[in-house]
Amino acid sequence: FSVCVTESGVLLCLLAAVHHTGTRPDNCCFSHRSRRISRKYIASYIFTDSRCPKPSVILITKKSKEVCVDPSEKWVQDIMDALNKESS
Image (cartoon, rainbow, N blue to C red; front, top):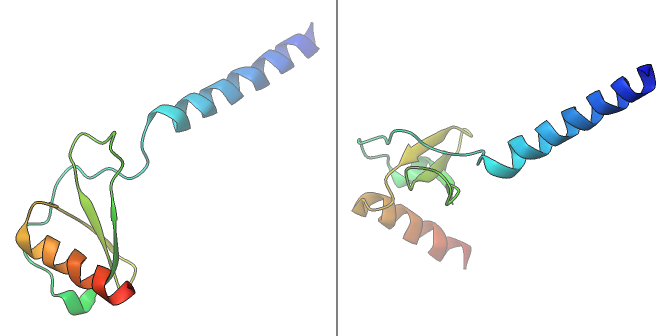
């Protein structure tokens, strides 16, 4: 009986872990920075997961800080364009 409880507990833990990682995105933004950031401070960017409630871009600074911004803002698009040109 104790083996069944232990195996059931492990199975339950595994199912909970799969459920947690399988349904919830890791990198969502719930607010956006409104003030512009100079391009010279930005190293890269990533888009948030499409399952997030608010479409966002995360700018990653040269000091490895992450800043949530609105991808529809022109200044954000300009930074992304500049980074894309530099990498090609």
